[in-house]
Amino acid sequence: MAKRHDYKFCFGPWNISEGQDPYGPPTRPSQTFDWKLDQLKKLGFDAMMFHDDDAVPDIDGKSDAQIRKEARELKKRLDDSGITAEMVAPRLWFSPMTIDGAYTSNDPKCRKYAIERSLRSIDIANDLETDILVLWLAREGTYLRESKNGRRSVELLVEAFDKMLAHDKTIRLAIEPKPNEPMDHAYLPTIGHALAIAQLTRDPNRVGCLIESAHAILAGLDPADEIDFAMAFGKLWSLHLNDQNGLKFDQDKPFGSSNLRVAFNQVRALERNGYGKHGEYVCFDVHPFRTTKVDHWLAHLDNSRRTFLHLLQKARTFDEKEAQQLINDRNYAALDQLVLHHLMGC
Ligand code: GLO
Ligand code: MG
Image (cartoon, rainbow, N blue to C red; front, side, top):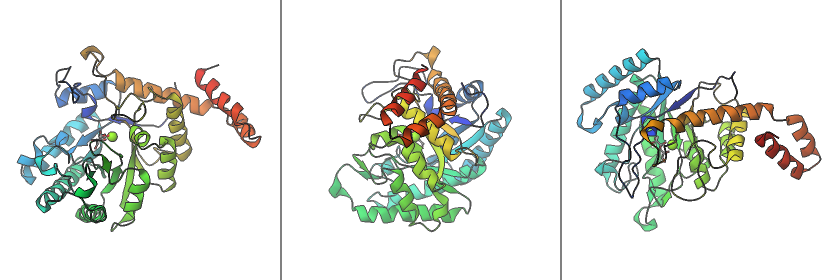
């Protein structure tokens, strides 16, 4: 396992989840936020990610002043525990106001709600002293192609991003693309879409992205290529490492659990691009299996970080010289074996 490194790690309170799925109820009791914060610290992680209502519960029923007060109290609690807030993300997929989408809802009242809630999230981000607003655009897409005008939806997304950029001169928007689930088709399914729409906004330099391994795999893409692409633009501002076994429901498995080689290549891509050099965190958006007992409730987080560090060691000890010779000789069969032997330790 790599001992000397500068990577910083984080996860969100939702990553200590209770095991419910569309077919059955929770299998573990729910825990308080304070307990989760203690676990994060005990596991030796550096930062926590926050949905707006993780930071300020029942946010819709509270005044701006109350929200700011609670956000500042949270910041104090985080400071006391030596934990940083990595980002804030408006949770735009729970409310009755976002049933038909948030920024792209067909109902103007709902669109207004979504934007106002996003601006409040930016205020919370300010109070928590992070400049990253993560936008996982969960319900911006269609179940039914004819229900929305795709061209108009792009305009509505740009309008919403522009209002956020105007609200605060320092906030950076990190779009987290996902091709499907909960929608049949999402409007911004890949990093290419996220970086392209950035160019239509009033300040493209403040619109970047967050890559989630599982989301890239669901789009039929290689997460390592997505990392190289985003970092070629200097726009990978956050990262959700996890794993996904093929094209099925979003699995959020521990990092490396399904495909060690794909995970190895993600770590290599992070290394060659210098991820983290500008303060970016490695976040694990992983969930415990439904079968996980309370006693083993945090293993998926600890294991993901261990796997990351083992793969970091593998990336740093990979015989690049030998690999280059094989590339020069176009001997990709031998290159394939070099990688496999290295990963298998033989
Ligand atoms: C779901 C997403 C989700 C987001 C999180 C932050 O598929 O990965 O977990 O990352 O809500 O906005
Ligand atoms: Mg995610």
